[in-house]
Image 1 (cartoon, rainbow, N blue to C red):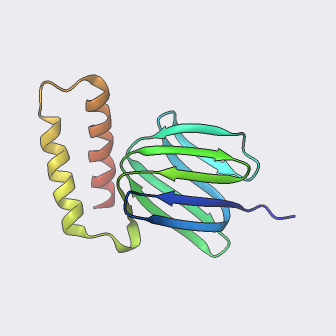
Image 2: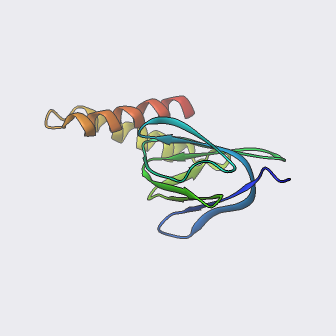
Length: 130
């Protein structure tokens, strides 16, 4: 019996990543890191800045995501996001630029707690990738 499920990650430009042989996906949800296996309970959640880890029989793939929403039902994981990057092909200059921009945003005194939390998460993740 197969232990695999389908994933589709979509951004505004295209269907970014599709694979029907997923064993496990770990996503950075607002509730914390969420592991998803075949036959997981149906769920809808928001994503925070972090790394999506996708495990297949052939290995692991990692993607940086800034925001989005996920839905898992009927053994299909759908992720909609505005910004996603494949870590194996990431542009280091773009990464550094995004890090500087996020660090500058943290200096704004008018930020509410939620915005400050999300930007802090983004800075932490970008530093760990860089």
